[in-house]
Structures are given as structure tokens and as C-alpha cells.
Length: 133
Ligand SMILES: [Zn+2]
Image 1: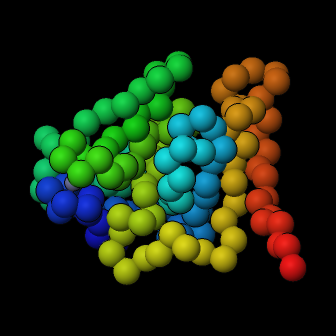
Image 2: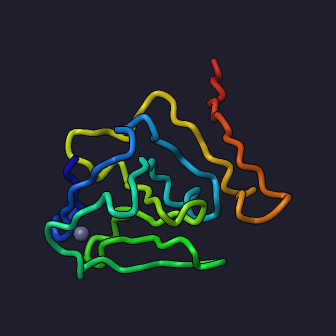
């Protein structure tokens, strides 16, 4: 898969773990605001074609996860996972030919992160929009 940020400075290729089958949202404090759908890839599964030096890093909390985004257009491209630092999540919306507007996307329980000890749950939530008629 090929991907890019919005302005096109950052372009990359991704070798995903399992195509779009791993598409997830997350409800942690960052992801809930970012709103992106990510797919999984191994840490070495991303190859930058252009603009790697135009990426910048955001970290918070335990500072294990690395959230990368383009300095110019601000688009989140990928992040190194806190739950598995050997893995990255890639912004599905950045990938050529793919849409993040999937009918149903599993939501990881990032509020109760498994790395936060016994109170953390590794479970997943299934978001079901309430339909008013
Ligand atoms: Zn950009």
C-alpha cells in the first residue's frame, strides 16, 4: 500500500499485517480527538519515499507511543504503539485507494489501556450508533 499526508511532502509505502482487517479506532484521550482509523503493520513495515524529515513527533503520558504527523499539513500518518512497540498503526485515510468510512470499525478500549495495570482491560468495544427515527 502507498500513502501520503495531505500536502504530499510525506509519502510512504506500508506492508500491513493483515490488510484492512486490522482497522481500529481507539477511545483514548488522543485518539478520541484525532478520530482516525488505523491499520496494523510491523515496526519495519513502513518505508518513507519522501519527506521523512518533515514528520514530527507528539508524545504524552508514559511517552511510550510515538505519534507522527506532517509538520506542514498536520496530518497524522502513523504511530508506534504503546501496547506493542514492535507494531505501528497507520492512518487508513492516508492510504491511496482506501477509505476510513467503513460501515463498522472496532473501537479499542484505550481509556482502560492494557499497559495501565490491573485496571486496564485489553478488551474491545463495538461502537453502535444510536439511530433516532
Ligand atoms: Zn503534509
